[in-house]
Image 1 (tube, rainbow, N blue to C red):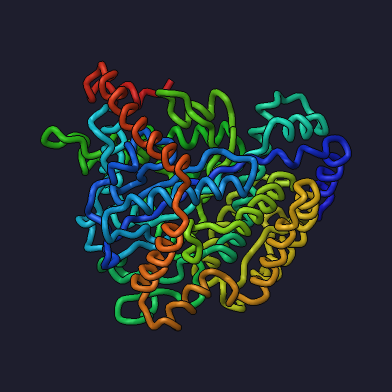
Image 2: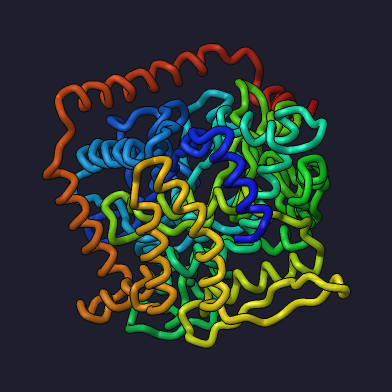
Length: 530
C-alpha cells in the first residue's frame, strides 16, 4: 500500500473502527427472456411481474424482453444476493411456458432489429417518455446493441464513514462537497484500474452470429454459428458492444463534479446533424425526445457513473447539481453465466475491496494523455486480456508530466492486489468475514492461471459440450431455471411478491389518471433544465 492509503486506513481504525462496516450496496441485474429455441422472446412483459413502469424491483431496460431486477439497498452482501435470488425465483415461476431467463451477457438468437421489441410502459406521460427515449435509441444506434445485458453494482459509504473520514482530513469543505470530491477520486482510480475487473469477471468472449447482423468484424469463427476472440474477456464491453461513434467526440470530464455536469449538460443541449436528419416528430409520432447529441444524460455510455436518487419530476443531472454525489454505479460487469442469479458472492466481496481501495487511495486528476492510455488499456483487456503477453501502459511520476511505461497485465494486476490486501484485511476483521481475503486469493490465482477466469471457463464449456454459444447458454439458462424452481418462495415471500406486483399496477393507473398535460407540453416541461 502507498502512504496515503495506509494512513487513511490506520487513522480510521484508530478513531472510528466501525466506519468501514458502513458500506451500502445494491444490484441491478439485466437479462433477456428467450423462447424454448433460444430466440429473443416476442411476448409481452408478464402480467404477474407487475408494471414495468412502477414496480420497484422488476422492470425492463431497452426492450420488452430485457428484464431488469433491482435489489433494495443493503448493508449485507448476503442479504443483497438473497434479495436478488428471491426476485429471480418469482420471475422464473412467472415466465411464459417454455421461456428462460437468458444467462449470458451477449444475447440469444436474434432476427435483426425487427425481432427486438421496444419496451412498453403504458400510456401515461411518463411511460410514453420512456418508450420514446428508447425509440430514439433504436433510430440512433439500432436495436441489436441494446439487447446486451449486464450487472450494475451500486456502492456507497454511509454517514458513519463519511463523518469519520471528514474529521481526519484538513480543509473547509462542507460534508457533501467532501463526499462528492472523494467519490470522484474513486471514479478516477476506477477508470485507471477497471481493466482488472474485466480480466477477472468478464464472461463474454463469444457470441451468436445473429448478433453481428452483417456488420464487419475481426472475430474468429468458433463453429457454424459462433464467433469470438480466443483471448477476449468481454466482447460486451468491446467495440462490438456498447459503442457510440457520435459520443466519441464527447470529452466528459471526471476530474470534478462541476466540470462533469457542465460537459454532460452541453451534450444534452447541442443539436447533432445526423440526429436532426432522423426528425423529431414525423407523421404525428415522436421518433426521439430531441435531436441533441444526447437525448438525456442516461444516454451517455460509460463503465461508471456518479449518481444521486432523484426526486419526483427531477432529472438525474439536476439531483447531482443540487445535492451532490450519493453513490456510484459500476456498469461494466458481465453476467456470470455459471450463477443462477448472474453474480456470485466472491465477486461482491472483491468489489467492496476494489472500490474502497479506489476511494481511499490517492487519485491524481486525469490528463488527456492518461485518458487515452486508460481507454487503450481497457480495450486491450476486453479483447486480448487472457493472452500471456498482454501489455498495458500507465503514467509514471517524474519530471516529465507525460511519461508512461509499459507493464504486463499480470504484473500490474499483482501490484493492485497487493495494494488491496490491506483493505481486504481490515474489512475481513471489521466484518468478521474471511471472504474478503479469500476473494483476493482467488483473484491472484486467476491472474496466474487465466483458465480460472469466467471467460476461459465459458469457452471451455462450449468446447467440451460441442455446443455453439447460443445452445450452450440456453442449456445453462435451463439448468438455472430448474435449480431456482426447486427452491420456491415461502408462502409469505410469495404473497409479498404478489402484493408488490398488484400495487405497481395501481401506481401506474394513478400516474396515468394524474396526467393534466398533453404529451407535447409534458415533454417540453421534462426537457426544460432549471
